[in-house]
Length: 496
Image (cartoon, rainbow, N blue to C red):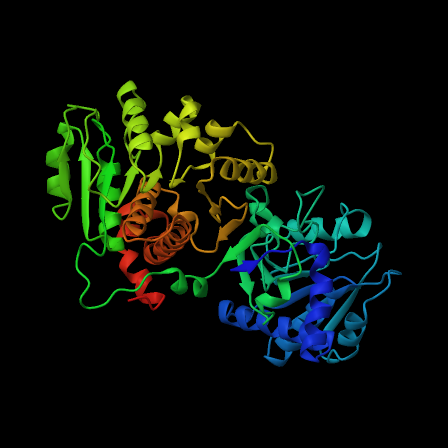
């Protein structure tokens, strides 16, 4: 997994890499610019003019290199540069000197009056080194960019954002942010969504071993991290090898959630899936999910004890369960009696929040709260940085895995590491999507995966399935569409 280091170390990392590779910083900048342009030319095949706003540091140097490459590709490019007394970086100066004469160059001064028309704007004003709010001419330029209503693309990080902290003041509101090698931490904060837009991470070839000297709890989960986390099976494998799981939940009027969890577990590859539901849900389960077995429960409209759990390899509890005294008894029994892998979601998390004494008894457990459910567990947070800190304290204290759901879902591990998922999109914000994730993670646990493996594989496959499902459905994507695409995620990742 790719470490996410602090912005203050990026320049040092670059120096280490160029020295080890016997290349120049200009050549590394060229590599980044080529990666950006490869993405850009694949994304924007129209011939709209491109305006690139360049600061005087290395982010501006990136912008100048991008201008040169796009011009060579036949695009109409205008470079806006600051006539500033600030010291210009060496790579900025060199890239400016080799710009083709045909590229229009506009000096930005305090008296400059300019307006953007129907162009694509590339923001290369400030990079990860910024540690103060924007002011003066820079603030004025960012205001003009934001009021232009054009497509704006930020190089590495939107100008005005600090790399590791919350925004102070104004920042570029980008439709796309193309970050190099790893996403800077602040790009993953929900508070910065309107500034970051769609996040793209371009690999520029800096190997993981170059990050070893930098201490960071933050990691970025990528597609080529996933295959090695998976177990392998062979043609003599039978349904017992693929795990026997039980999903518990559902109540009158809320049976759809456990239906979705059961379907997701089956599509993820569980050998045997059972659902424990109240009596009112039995005909629904058996008609909607004929491949699943139904464990008959004494409860008419809600689940009640007793239940049989000893024969299963993993349990998932919570979808549609309801918050009732019977639910408290049920969750208490499972926590105290089941020592194998357990996924706790939805109403089961809300029960934990109301009965904190149960938290001390957790073992072999993955909790999957969304932001509101997490708030009920640990209290409100001022911002996402504080939320991440509370999640780290929670998982290290209770030695559990916590999947904090949302854009760039974070898998929080008992050793303090926090892994940001790179898959998924806004079209997954639909009822039942979390129930599908419960089924996926429970399935992996039942197949013999560790808590860490199950959580990481679960969130990645879930997000990728959402991306595949929404290609055609867009805002019309529903949870069952996501479930239908789970098998395709294995194919895309080359996992048999």
